[in-house]
Amino acid sequence: MKSLKFYMQDSIKKGYSLGAYNFVSLEILKGICEGCQKSKSPCLVSLSEGGFSYLGEDFILPTFKTAKKHYNIPIFLHLDHGKSFEICKRAVDLGFDSVMIDGSSLPFEENIALTKKVVDYAHKHNVFVEAELGVLAGIEDTVKADNNIYTNPNETKIFVEKTGCDSLAVAIGTSHGAYKFKGESTLRFDILSQIEDKLPNYPLVLHGASTVPQKYVEIINAYGGNVKGAKGVDENLLNEASTKHNIFKINTDTDLRLVYFASLRKHLKDHPENIDLRKFNEIAIEEIANYVAERNEKVFNSINKI
Picture 1 (cartoon, rainbow, N blue to C red):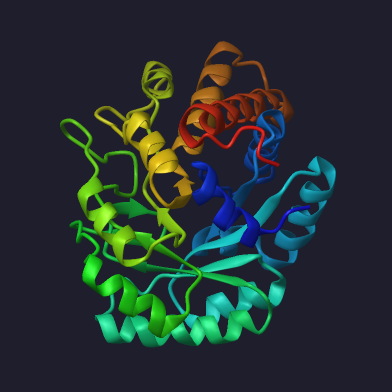
Picture 2: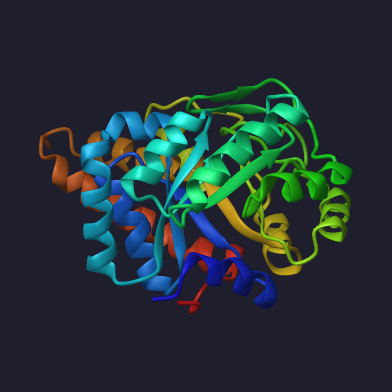
């Protein structure tokens, strides 16, 4: 099985990106894995600090290892938005493949110091480290910020050289949550190109990149939900980032929640007699798998890359 390090470089060379899909339950994890198996795509499955706490560390590794063995495709376990050295260390000790230390809210030098501390520990255990420069607006799990602060290209090379991080999450206009744009969605590809000039062939990451498919928003609203006005990133912009830039990983969380809850709400309204969780969960798993496979093919260009 090819390594995460292989995909970090191969994705840049061949113009594709890996989906990093967040999960908080067995059903979502199964949907992600089945979608990636269907499209023959490598991926990362990500746990936020909140997801880490919700699932419980005693369940995470056995469940992940079982899924990896069952689906037999390149799947890597990633800690998303670790805010402290301690949570990153715990993930490393448990056997995660990579961790993200998010010091983006700290002053530049403090971000460097924290990131380097995590890198020094993680690299001793052959675990990759993602860091972040710039701040994404929005709310997702335990991550919250009111305004975007674009990544300063002039800081990126200094940051990477001083920390030794393996990849860097950059802020170019994406944001967390379901309400990303009021008007037309845009990304600052000019900033991204400047970053790439400073860090040629270096693996970069996009967070807050859910497309918020209106198909699922409409189903949720039609069946008693209230996510009116939700709007994500245009998938054509993400495809451009995947195929024409050095974006090796693109995160997706909100979309999977929308798919799951659309399936759940519709099934329960159409079948009020049902008290069997398996019946609607099977439908949700299939919907998530189809969504992931389609996203891998049409957006990330990661189909047939295993």
